[in-house]
Length: 344
Image 1: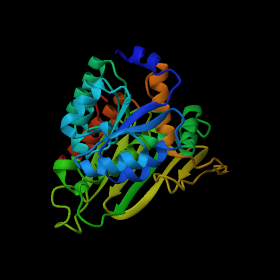
Image 2: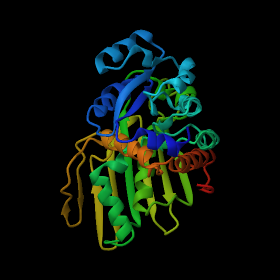
Image 3: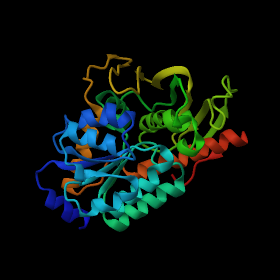
């Protein structure tokens, strides 16, 4: 069934969401958020652990027939309970699982980063187009009120263009996990945390991509732990309007802020990138907007996109843009040269 017809068939009911991968984010954030959504509901899971799947079915009230293994995702094609598949597996598996979901005729959300390469992003986008299904990226902060203030200030240029920007998202990683393994993560903190700063800088520049980047990897303080990914990285993004963002992220540091300065004022958000507790202010004073459930808003918006047959504002193309930028930053880091960003 093509995307438009599927949207009509959905009518006013809550759309069924299947979560692919039942790790910390799915368990701690997405499943609770789906209890708050108005337009979608948790209707199934894909997991390599059958016992865990049964526990989820019992806890969340969906039938055990809506539990699939990664190798049996194609069987979702015959199940009308599932409308949307949300891929929450490690980065290097996103493309494979997104393509399987699309081949089953389901609309797709990929957690960030979209994939681990531009080529993989292109493959997912092409498959979703071929199958007539919609695609979105889990960029939850596009639905967060404090960050909406930044986008509006950039759009109206109330303070002028945000020519000087600075962002940092860092934490100290404890215990070995897949995020420190290149084969699963596709990179280190730049892939996991840096994409938030990239997103924010693009927002502050009016929604456009940078035209060039420079970058350097900082010396590793824990080289035995971060053997095949960067531990910390700093990079600079140059935008077409002359805006410049100085950015950093690390798995062995602290940081959670973004600041944008214009000729007639500034915007700052700190803490900036968490699941809640976000605070922002401008040169005119504190930003008085609520902290709302980001993931619930994000998933409800995509469900409405399906129902209304429209493109998500956090589209696959936006995810691909960010993959182009990420590849450029890694190229700059490895070469020590300024790298032009093209094709974003």
